[in-house]
Image (cartoon, rainbow, N blue to C red; front, top):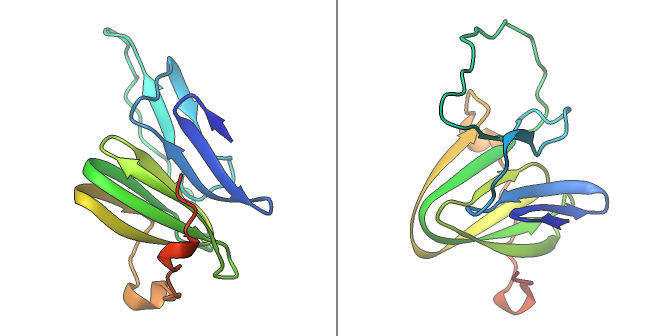
Length: 146
């Protein structure tokens, strides 16, 4: 599903990724993620003078089953290849400077198209190689690039 600068990529009813393009604009607070996601992704567009009251987040125990990652592309161009839970290739997207992607399920791989700088945000603590299973990359001839 694509809506003016925002896209949900689903496969068989499972959300694999959410992409927020650099050109996305909205007033107020807009969250893209379902409430049950362990990683929440939102956008805030406020006018000058808006006051957000100081606050502290309460300690809340949460159980996390899968790591969800957010990438913020600072500069360059990157292709993300998306895979389902069965490690089968689904499709690809190009990400450019200013784009944000939340990788929420399945697998993913990347190819850097232009020199790229990006931030990664994910749940911790990081468990190293225990946290991931390497899967075969899709052949270039089979890629569905959008």
